[in-house]
Length: 354
Image 1 (spheres, one colour):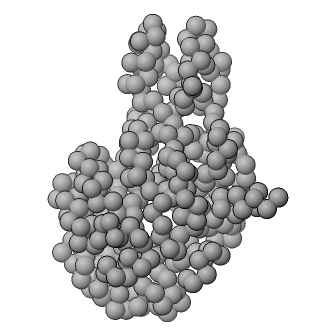
Image 2 (tube, one colour):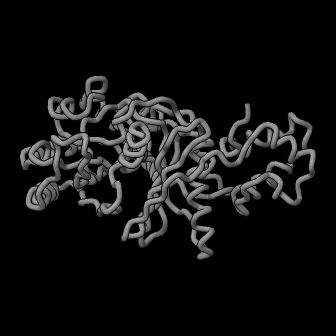
Image 3 (tube, helix red, strand yellow):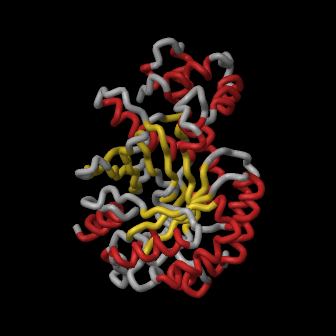
């Protein structure tokens, strides 16, 4: 059974080639063809002998994702729906910012975290993505940019697509090491952000990795009762346990952490919740940043709606007044299926009705 070549770090590729009778220098040549020249077929590797190419073709593949749909927003955001070899669908999003191009990747087919407002969890997790399948999302987007011949590159990554990244930890770490490798895509660790719904034990493990990768935590409520009502993960990792793991992360890494907070109309967007959130973060405010996110409505979650501009402003100003660094996130892709998992869910349901 063949696997994705993108799932190998350069050390693993070197080890594998040596085990199969190839010279050590072949690994850097192959790596250069994959990530610098960005070929899509092994046969395009001009300075690799036929024996090595045949060996690679027998054990690995380069392309496993087929573009099914591409939605383009007026603001330049592009959402790709990719079909994988097993027929499953995943979403990847390209966003353009003044500082460069950022890609949001998916780590699982479906999601079991079960946040009541989220489109990603509309379809339960069927499997994890391999490290190679996650890397290939970046490569597909980079190939899209290459085709425009503008000499543009993916410079930032957010691991915030479908799935819980820390529930696919080993493959996540493989992905991070590949895309960060200076001999490959060379995307700086500080330009990469991983988002978790709050798996406390994995936050501790991630802190011990000694990476410069940024961490974001989906908080969305300042107390257990409210958070449990919208995020069932809070039953396993209540706020006290979550905050202890975050304290460990801050003490170990001395790196700032981002708290994601989706504002749901008349649910978690009152001034009282803002005050409670400020109290919760008070002792870590020097290394905390709150990202306030206007809600993208999802048809299947009709009980939720977007907070009013007045409520968003009051929430923001309350946090700022309490000394909490925060921002209302700039929206992108609102004229397409903006909510993560929405496009995939719609296409699967459409196929089921045919």
